[in-house]
Image (cartoon, rainbow, N blue to C red):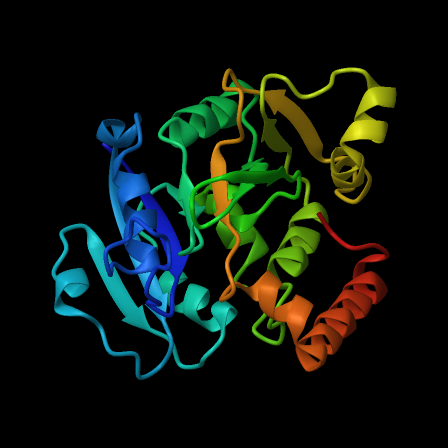
Length: 266
């Protein structure tokens, strides 16, 4: 049986969803991994990277199939790199601790990889509220929708820990410099006409423009995206929007990315 390592960076923050009953954000993410329709076809290894010195609740530490590793820093990139040092098997995926997968995600993503021997698959996300209300559909290839053969991870390398906010853009920029074919999963009802796509889904146009022509769009059979991305006050996006200092750091990283890659990599 093939092995899939799912990497998560987490500060083990409590969930503020009304139905959470005191559970951690990451517990919903883990539950969504185990609920995958394709889960029985793979041996799933969930590796959670945490900040140095994080106290681990016993209920989480003792879960079968979950390994928690401490990073040597206090950033998302450091936590993910710590988790990546424990990758097992043939495939690697990522899930942010405040996001969840649709049960069909792995099935659709593996089918996409196998369609044309793609070296990387991603998915667009649906942003949701803490009450699970759909807010907006996005088309950025969020890290929570990444699936790849381990060989792709090895070729691109670890996250650059000098990035605090946009490590995913930098990693995608390095991916785009390699001769690795990519596919991006979008929902069945996404526009097919290019003029309509540019008008109604400009982020799809941005993806195709800023990925060095490496991405092929693939439609799955579901009405909604395969990744649910939670918007909440503790998220990085919320922090960037409300904190002037953080917003400045984010802007500086964007400018660095544009200098290094000629665009903002997607």
